Length: 358
Image (tube, rainbow, N blue to C red; front, side, top):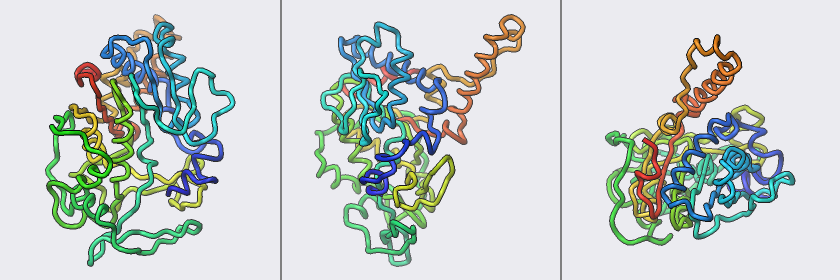
């Protein structure tokens, strides 16, 4: 998966970019950027309107989201924004010069770190549950042929035992979770901690995507924020409802295809968002919020409601604009589609209430 996505001929490194192959919230409508701009404004207010407001987009594609946010921001806010795109592909030739383009997340961020559909492309191994326990899945990189490999490592097994249990756990309330008290943990102790607490047995079904690498990736991103908010938006699932056969799949040219890891298609899997949130919590040491995109966008002003018909007679052009905006919002908040994304907000050095619209 690593080579297929990020190797020399990898899907995200070469070619036309993600927008040519699949539709995300970023590409779907300016409404998404408008809502994220309101989120950025809330972070700016919580920070006391600093002279420099960092805006970091991890997995920036070709910079589409940063361009949209800068275009929609009020002049006084835009003048203080320092936009950074984090991406492994070469800098697009038409990217505005004010956008910094780099391959690593900067340190000391004061502002908003965005990760929209980044974690689902952080590589994972897949485990298959057999009568003898978990086995790793091996895949021919050219043909996609699958065979069983060796048992997972102790770290893999610890993560599976805790985060992908054999039977569903009671459903939690997906709202806010209090931060655990205790000292920060470094990378090694995060790896050692993923198996602590609850869960017995060896898994929740036929397949599982082993997510501790994503946990560490997110914890590393949160650790780059000095003050502000880290926001991850992705397709995901929770411990009480892991998919029995996993979610690994591929996308090419707007179509879902078998996930053959030859670099010709996106290879992606949904994110264990509660596991990721727990890892970020250890770094941020602050309460976090985990809600659906539908709820998040509605709180930020995108309700998807049809404009009143009376507007059509008073202002036909305004009615058509409102109708188009409502249609775009409806797509972004559809619980069976993009609205099913989960939003993970992890504030650092600021109060959760100050950065979460209610």
